[in-house]
Length: 195
Image (tube, rainbow, N blue to C red; front, side, top):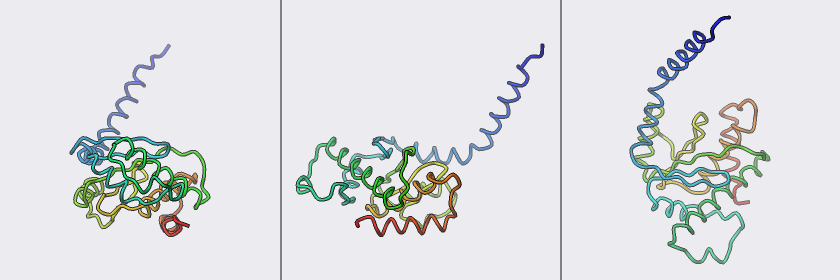
């Protein structure tokens, strides 16, 4: 009877070496995440990561999209954290569902993570840490990390919808469409969000 122990050791060694060889990119990403304590809010479709509660307040104020249309409660703002968290998650989930409807790409998907940075400088630092290149974007989405990156300085419902469209398109098809095709569809979503 042969032992499986040498095979297991070889497999573990191979996995270990694969992990070690991929560490530089991962370390850069972790460095960005560890530069401050990330807080997390989960909703039905989104995992929202932020560093300061003020960012949630600003995000809620910058996104004027209302999934149910205008309501009487929109006239009054609340400083209660639970009300602002509820408001921003409803808006983000509403945008997600609207994007699915515009694209006619419904179905169960995993949650998309949205990292919210307090300013453009930190957003650009994160981009450089992940890609090693200079950032020329107000927001972006990385398929491999399942994450949308935005800054409070430039965020609004159109940008969120555009990046969510990239996420939905990339996860809807068994083979991801060409980047140009995904960009055309994402711009279409951005322009038709409020119709």
